[in-house]
Image 1 (cartoon, rainbow, N blue to C red):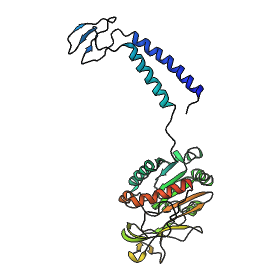
Image 2: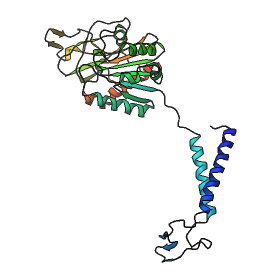
Image 3: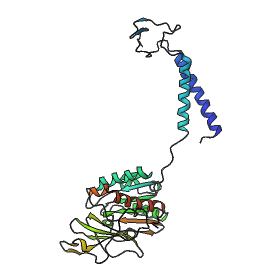
Image 4: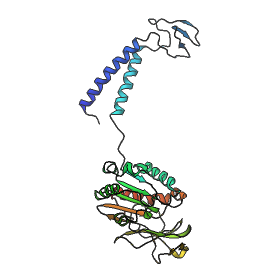
Length: 325
């Protein structure tokens, strides 16, 4: 709310503005107004449904408002405008940077992912800024505007050394990271990044429907999943963990699909009894969340997946948890 002194100053300014506006009204002998279908032309003659007659600025024709009510309306409008300006809209919960630069495979689902995150921002009152231009945002000044950076299906080497250093400072200052799908197929030669993601992509078979399992309900966004449920995805196989103590949220049952894959000399035979799909960890002063889901554009219209994605964004941005008990 504006201070008393500020309010007085605003009203004084309004008074000056109102005086000027009223003076203009008084100096408008050929005021063109519309009343009961009547108008006034440049010759000062009234034209309309009531016929044509000379215009006398001293003896105001019927239907033309008196300057005094008009003065009051102008003054009231100016006061309302000042009140609106002195009460800005409440701030959003936080701001998220969505980054989707690709130096390798480019997923067709990226636009759907951006739209879904923008919708989540509207639903949960957080700001969203999307770019593929690393030069624009990966510096200390720009990153300071955000609480979480989301790598949406990035691939390959997407940041230069200066940009990497800025991102590391952002996380160490308490920032959050969210990796979606092929964020684990990004920056293999940057050890700090691969540890933040937790596990890196190795290979995948053809898209298939399989049974997923919830490993932990006690995390934001997990409460809407059944204990076991069907999901259709491009099931990523991962290498060994790059860090200890990853907290796993979702896994896929390899007995419910065919995990074998072969790409030239690279092969995959699944991950065995435990095949993780999503996890999180505190990392280097900040927070990191990853989900392998999100290959198909239609996945981003799935309400349960969207809720899962919001849970990761919310936790990475704020550090706030959730208890299912």
